Structures are given as C-alpha cells and as structure tokens.
Amino acid sequence: MATTTVEQREGRRQTIHTVRNEAQADSFEAELRPLIPMALRLAAGMRLDSLDAEDAVQSAALRAWSKRGNRQPGTDLRPWFLAIVANQCRETHRARWASVLRFADPPEAETRPGDNAAAIDLVNGLRRLAPHIRLAVVLRYYLDLPFEEVASISRCSADAARSRVRRGIESLKTTLSMQES
Amino acid sequence: MSSDDIESTLRDGLRAAIDPMVPGPNAEGRVMDAVAASREHRRARGFRIEQGLGGFLVASIVVVVVGAGLGLSLALRSHPIPSGPSKTGPPGPAPTAAAIATATPAPSSSASPSPSPSDGVVACEGAMLRAHFIDVDGAAGSEGGDIMLENVGHAPCTMDGYTNLQGSVDGHVTQLGVTHIQAVLINSNNGTLPTVRLITLEPGQAAYVAVEWTDVQSTSTSCPVYRTLLITPPQGSTAVTMTVTPPVTPPFMLCGSHGAAIWINEAPVGLTRYFYQP
Image (tube, rainbow over all chains, first blue to last red; front, side, top):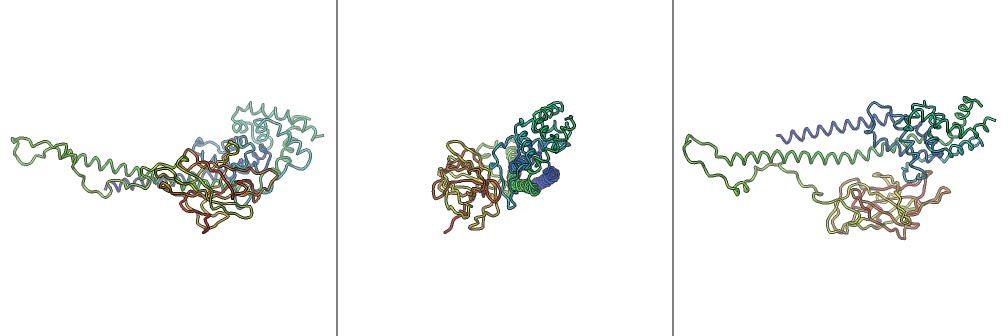
C-alpha cells in the first residue's frame, strides 16, 4: 500500500516537473524568437560575414537555451541574450564550421557589404576596431540601443560604453568624413 | 562636420554596409529549428534520466520501508511476547544470532528493485574500444559509413546516445561539429536509424555509429582533411583513436554543401550496421 502511494507521488512529481519544464521552455522560446532578427543584425555587424553571423547566433541561441536557468528571474531577456551573442561572435573567430547544423533549407548565398566604395571602406574601418569598441559602435549606431543597454550587453558601465563609442567614432572619423565629402 | 552629422552619417553608413550581410529572412527559422532540435534531444535524454532517477528513488524508499518493517518484526520476535498470566516464571531464552540471521522476510512482490541490464556494468571508455571505419558508402559528394566500436576489454560496458567526434591533423585536435539525428540520413541505405537507447557491449561485441558528410568543396576555402578521428563514447571521458584509411578517399575531407557550411550527420550508437549492404 505504502509502495503504491510512493510510486504515485513520484509519478505525480515527475509529471508536474515535466509539465513545468515544458512550459518554461515554451515560454523561453516564445521570448527568444522575436530577438533573433536583432541578434542576426548584431552578429552581422560583429562578424561582418553572413554565414559567420548565422552560425554565431545559432550557437548563442543554443547556449542561451541551455543556460536559461541561470537568468535572474524578472530580468529582460534582450540584453542577456545579446550579451551571449556578442560573446559568441568573439569566440567563434574563424571557427564557422565547428558549430554548424545543416538543414534542408540552407542559408542564402553569401552576401557582401554594400557594393559602393563607402560601404566597403566603412566595413574595413569596422574590422580595424577592437572587438569591444566595434560592439559598442554597432549596438549604439546600428541597433540604436540606449547607452544603458549598450553597457549592459558589453558588461561595462554606461560611462565606459560612452567612452568606447567615442573612441570608435574617432577611429572611423576619417572614413566618415570622406563619405560626407 | 558636427557631432550630430557624424552620428547621422555613421548610422546611414552602417546600414548601407552591414544590412547586406545580415542573414536572410529564413535564418530566424533555422536558428529556432536548431533550438527546437536541441530541446527535443534533451527532452528525450532527460526523460530517461528522470525515469531512471525516479525508479531508483522509489526502489530506495521501498527497500528502506521493507527493511524497517523487517527490522521491527525481528525486534519484536527477539522479545518474548507475554502470554498468559504466568508472570513469575523464568524468562524465555534470548534469540540467538543464528536465529536472527536465518530469519526470512515475508514475501513481497515489490520488495526489491529488479536488476537492470546495466547493473554493475561500467560506461565504455575509449581504452576499452577499438574503432574501425566500415561500410563506406556515398554518392554525389555525400559520403557515409559506420564507425565500428568493438569492445576489446574483458568486461561488458554500456553506451547510450551520441559519441563525441574530434579530428586530428599533425597532433592538433579539433572539435568536429555534428548534427545529431534520429530520422533519416541522406544516404539512407536501410532506412532505419537506431534510436537513443542504452546498449551493453559484451567483450568482443561491436556497436556502430552511422555518420555522413560531404567532401565537395563549394567555396574558395579548402576543406580540412582528417585522417585521424578521436571518438569519445557517450558517457566516456577518454577517446579511442581511429585512423581513416582507404577506401575512404579523401579521408574525412569535411566541406560545406547545399549552400551551407561544413557538417557531419551522426546517428546514436546502435547495435546494427546502418550502411551495411549484404
């Protein structure tokens, strides 16, 4: 009699645990999905390559999914996830093939920066920036995020984020002046 | 240029430069598909682990409860039960140790957990295995074959799930990215892939891992070539080395294909040869 009760309790506990986990996973995926386009833009700005960008976001999404339990309850998913994407962009430096999943629907053909000379110059300018500076510039001026969020994603203070953006602009100023003229 | 002008120019310039490099509209779906696939895989594994833990917990509780009942029963037996009004007679003899030791519990259908096939069997490690590449098959740039993992030890061992694959070139080891699959391989020879399940390898017995990859170079970047693979069993911590020799030519040249980057499909460890053709 006691055995049956224990088994029933254990069964119920497992069912509740599974249902709760499934619900949390569903909720996380629903929260994550709308952030993917922004993550792809961030990764494109960081990796400056379409396939690299998708690989980085895919890896970041898998990492975020597996680490979702580490997220503080009530915190905004966007800076947390974009920080993972930014980290992944740094870590997957030229290691594209190591993290690829294949699907029947393959990625689009590799794209190149805008064909005009100004765009190519700007991309070359971005490549010369240190990754943490490039991240700040891309977050601020490509994704149009406020400094507080730039700081949160970059894991630095808002002042440091402003400083990084300033340094990025200084480095790109020559390129930008040429574009303006 | 004023500060505002610079910022405005930078915004426009970044859009013009980066927008063409943003992955296309289908990328979002592919990323979420990868998450869903990972979730499915973890759910399958997690369910089995939970089942295992749950069963173990229930069995433990049953053992404790039955054990306690038995102990209580023996304790009561060890003390003479007052019978009748004779309070002045000598006390009965104390039970001997032998009597306690030979006491048997009442039969119970659920008194002890039934032993599982893996009871007392360790997880396979690389050192217990020998690896060969067999049943090589492929066409149109899609190569495939079975990695045979033979238990060369003197004791059985278990595996459950997917092996880890690493490639080695001149001693430099690289983690290989793989897609874990349980559905269909492109080179579907027998159409039935093994599912993730616990297998026990007796000494001399072999398990198989079906893999497939492409060796067609579709970009200007040359494809890495691996003549040595390091295969770590699913629950193992050490790898078995497999040197790839002809007729696998070129040996594990891993390329991108179908417009995608490099990939290897890998099936779970099973006891049947997927690519075998009689």
